[in-house]
Length: 255
Ligand code: G
Ligand code: G
Ligand code: NA
Ligand code: MN
Image (tube, protein in one colour):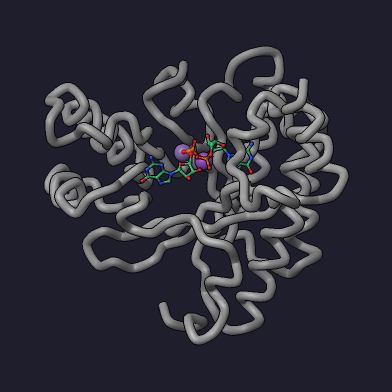
């Protein structure tokens, strides 16, 4: 359909570009890192969200090409940030099952990090629970192990909504649990959501993982999360996704 045609255009014209959303220590306000989120520039309609080409993510070659463009752009940005003396912390990019199935994903990423002389500690891979399912699971396990051995952290995105079994947390080298924003948005009104967040915080804590609340939109959600022992957050209240030029001087070195 037209979504796929548009997505192929994005790939061909290299229109994909990362926006960066901060991950915040809600106690201190310190920026711990950023998640790179895919956006693309439509020649007439301006900046577009991935939703406008969402169907195309089911096409492996398109998904893999978009990840490749994001990787190139993000590594370039991180390299320039580090050269300019700005410490971005950990910068996370999203990877999908198609990336892992494309062969040698971890080696390719690690090779690019090496070439650009970016310490692996500045990089993180976000995956959703769905990558653990299906025939590619063995390949995913191998790649995540390679990332972990190299010092790249692995984050489990949208945690709690998918099919992750607790066995996965034991089997795979997961460093970060990101609580899906559907549990955070009604945390103050819905006792069930609060209980789920509480359980994830405790679960992550007992595995020694960092737990991140996604979709934090209000100051009172921050207070509520801190009361529950969840100290790391991401969301519009803490910082919106922004293009890289928003980080140019004088903000450089400001953290
Ligand atoms: O930005 P937005 O809320 O529209 O993001 C929609 C979805 O697209 C989210 O689930 C997000 O994880 C996903 N997404 C954002 N950037 C990327 C990317 O670079 N690669 C992949 N595979 N998914 C992404
Ligand atoms: O699936 P994933 O968690 O990666 O989705 C990230 C997407 O969520 C981003 O595209 C971003 O635009 C969006 N997002 C980030 N913060 C918030 C927030 O506070 N509220 C809402 N509704 N969406 C958010
Ligand atoms: Na994500
Ligand atoms: Mn997420």
